Amino acid sequence: MLNKEIRRSVLIFLAVFAVFVFAVIISESINNTNIINTYPDKVSIAVPDIVSVSKPSQEAFDFQKSKAATWLIRLFLGFAVPAFFLFSKLSAGLRDWASRRTKRWVSMVILYFILYSLIETLIYLPLDVYTGFFRMHRYGLSNQTLTQWAVELIKSFTVNTVITAVVIWVPFLIIRKSPKRWWLYLGLVSIPYLMIGSYVQPVVIDPIFNEYKQVEDTQLSSKIDNLLAKTDIENCQMLQVDKSKETNQMNAFMTGVFNTKRIVLWDTTINYLNTDEILGVVAHEMGHYLMGHVWKSIVFGGFSSILVLYLVYRLSNRFLAKSNGSWGFGKLSDIAALPLIMLMINVMLFITSPVINAYSRNIETEADRFEIELTKNNFATATATVKMHQQSLAMPEPGYVYMLWNYDHPTYKFRVDFANEYRPWEKGEPLKYQKYIKYK
Image (tube, rainbow, N blue to C red; front, side, top):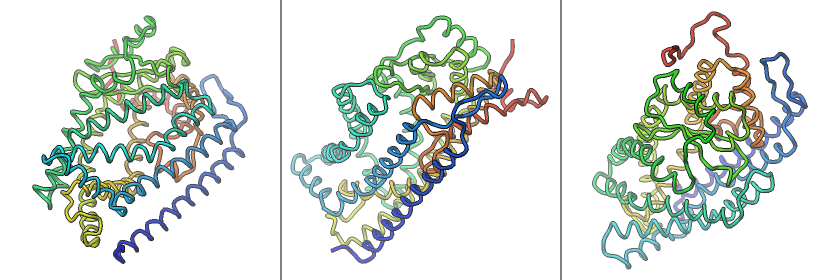
């Protein structure tokens, strides 16, 4: 029988989540009506250098509706799945099973986590199959066979589970050694952990899933080198990755630190955009490096985790005390407490998502600003933005609630408008990021 306070907390949370779902639905409906009534049917160029955003296709409306629905389902599962492990005592049962297989505490923790991850993956599997395979094929965004998709899923599960299993005992050891200060130590430890992860991922993890190589188009590669030479960016590789085997969508990203830093273009981006548009995309990623967004995000993430983990510490201990041992464990240092900790982390991430996303959208806007200042090609920036988002059936603007909780980049309507309007050199104004740009 659940403690009265725990029952009341669960009911309050369910009520709040229901209101949140209603807010998302209403917000999306209002937004769709606004887009239908205000956006032009076709993209038009008012003057040679201004791009307008057209009304999205019916497919895009349908895709957004499906994305919002499955996002809400996945969000709910983020709370329901760990709660299931707790209230069913499955977590305690897994711990007991693992304890009978090994006498070593570290081995027991690892074995427990592998089982936990496997069961969690199976619970999510129907949703993952639908969103990752069937829906992507329905809207013409995937090039994978079901077998190829399944192989990638298994590889992803294996890599993520192995990496986490290797270190999962560390936080529980810290909790055991310092039950009142573990949140602080874990938050501080997360900074070097994130740094090491950023260093290793490009050269160890990413190649497991895709092939990375030098940009094959020699003329494009030469122009990219010229663009890089306009700044003081150093030791940055320029690569392309074979994403066309998976998808028709376009993207690019920067990854790595120190001598592993690299800018990566999806081969679809190279195939579907013209040279000026590709150079703009590269300039955007250069901006992230030059403005130190990688390091700032690591430090921001580390210190933010201290606050989040402190709240997790307070809430977890409160609910654990109220449980009176009904979950099969009495300390947070018990590996069986993992779903309780994960549940509290997911609640905190849900609450803080708008702030985290706002920070991310801000640095993306600054990277857009740098792109424009470096290339001075507003038109290419705007047209690339339109092409990349329309190819992915993205909405020019989502509902406001969905945007706050789910958008770590600005809306593509905002980015196109910014590209159209930001021209400080035409007004004789200084460039904000002139210090990063050198002219020969």
